Image 1 (cartoon, rainbow, N blue to C red):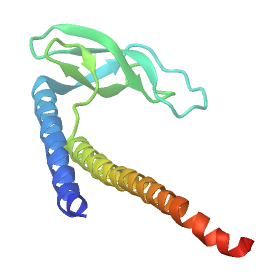
Image 2: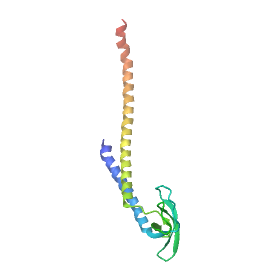
Image 3: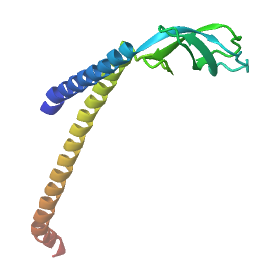
Image 4: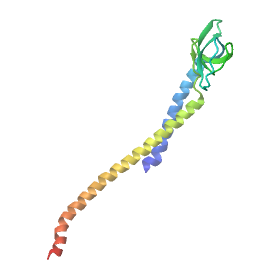
Length: 159
């Protein structure tokens, strides 16, 4: 019970905060190295009755005046020449949006919940194992006592 009452919250909070801090380091690093630019589609994207974004070639000019191209995910049916916002890294390569603080918070909560579940499952496994050991011991002692008592007890009925 002490492990559950003290260990479960300590493990959950400790693991959750550690995961949150690690995720926040990733968020800060990605935010520092990625930025959004406005790009133009070089060709139209086919409309295929689907809702999933499709890869298309885009072109943009970076802060140094260099014209760059890359592939980005855009909505189906977007015409050529349309402007889209894309995330690029320091090298000018199209990349995904940086992780958000919501991602870090979710990661912290999930890892904390898993740690709490792990402590609860470990405590239950220890309880079940201890009960199994004690039950076997008790049944062995009961069997040994029955070996001593049973001949005397059953002899009364065989007269």
